[in-house]
Length: 169
Image (cartoon, rainbow, N blue to C red; front, side, top):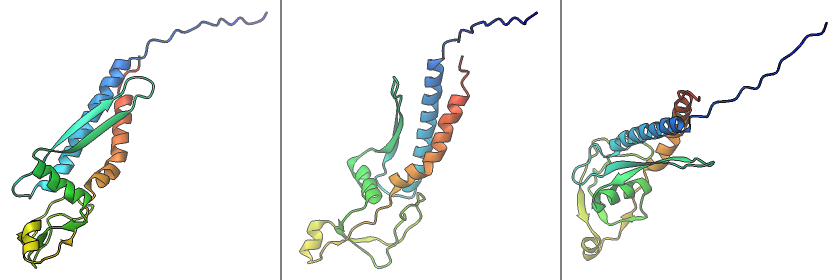
C-alpha cells in the first residue's frame, strides 16, 4: 500500500517590530556616546571657550526605516566657530603667530596635544593698521570626515548585533 503524507500549514507569529526598533535606538544612542567621546579629545587641551558635543539620533518608521546619528559641537558661537574653523579650515587667517608656534592638533588626528607659541597680533583691524597682510588659512583637521570613516564599520557591526540580539517572535 502507498504512503500517506499530511501537509499542515504553520502560521507565523507576528514580528516584534517594537523590540527591533528599541534595540536599534539603543545602538544609535551608544554610537552617539562613542562619537562624543572621540570628538571631546579634539578640545581636551583647549583654554577658554570649548564647545560641548551633542548627538541627535533618528529612526524613520515605514519601509525605508533609515537610521541616523548626528554628532556635532554646541555651545557659544565663539566655541563652535573655533571648532568649525579647525575642522573645515579657512582660506585666510587674520592672526599673526609667534615664530615658535606649533598647533595643538593635526589634520586627521583627534588627540589634542600641548602645542606651543602665542598669538602676537589678532584681528583684521589690528593687522591692517600695521600694514600686515592676512596670513595663509588654517589647515583643515577634517575631524568630521575622519570620524565618519573610522566609525562606519563599527557602527554597522553594532546595528547588526543589536538586531541579532532581538527575539524575532
